[in-house]
Length: 477
Image 1: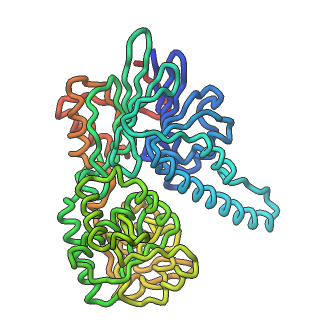
Image 2: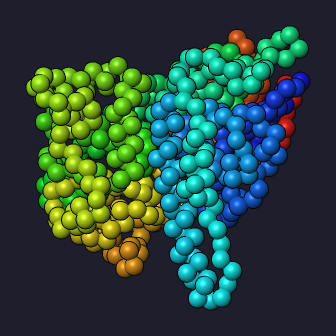
Image 3: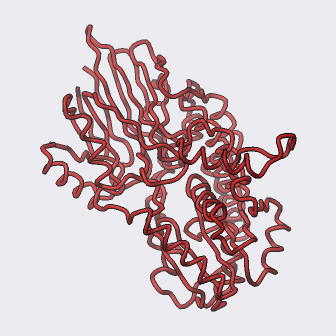
């Protein structure tokens, strides 16, 4: 009999990790960082909750750090086996993990300078760039819908989850005692209203199903309403003459915003002619998105290709079917001096920069130079966690501390809630409905307590019994 232990993304939405044990092998599903408040992130400092030497394979659902960010810790503790994921995920985690290691090393160095002055013992970074490089050397990129063996008794198939580029629904077929049992892990399911990526694929059979519940308690505002509001804000900002700042997450959200701005540009409805993507990581991620348009939705890919056909001469080698062709006024500002030059622009620019919650990155410098201006606009397109500057701003703070200064909040603040990359409650239930014939054991994971409970009750109304597991709980099947 196989067993599954819930090791993360159980008491919240981060730290995704599940251990599958069969008669012959052990397979780890996801290896994510705990993120959020300081006490939550402290869990990353604990040893991994299993003997690393016994793990035969790792399977990753997608690149976000709350699903992949502890992979360097895994190799730090001695893991040397394969790490399986889709090919786009392999390319994305190289960007995300290297950025994470750079931040870990920098933060440790700053802290150690303080400790040396006070005579305290120095600390080590959570992990180093060398450990990231070792983890990346173990990564195996796979295609969707191609079944492959990860151990002698476990086969894996990836289906498109539609959440971010390369995100996967993980299907594990376990051969045991002459029978095959199927474990399905939804990973993070995408919002079917989102741009670029296809809707989450339908899977209809499982013995055990792990279903995410991030938005298990609510539905999103319709994309039509969100885009109408977005267009209205852009028009208002154009009349006011100020800059627009869009704090955005590097993976997924930034590319969605670029595409939506491109739609407006193609319709002649984008008054701003200066648009800057000011995030080296988001620029690198956007280039990976451009390289994998085979997973785009047909409708959005057609729009990009049509724009490229119209704008590009056939013999122009510099012109290609990508997001920059779709939005030709977009400029990448990779160099620090180019980013700093944007601070001299007082009106007429759209600046997209990280971090998405304003707790780091270049957006803080742009807020320092624009937040106090009444003609400026700030558009929040993603979730703002408690305790972050972004949350303080949307909650009505009259001032925030940015780059060492207290900055007055005089700009117009807008929150657009329809750009979520996660499935809503209705979308989750609709996806679940395709398992009606097999009726698997259902476990709700990756959600806050209220969201999981709301989804449990909504599923119960449709005839589904579900379990909200506890951290460390083991089930047998």
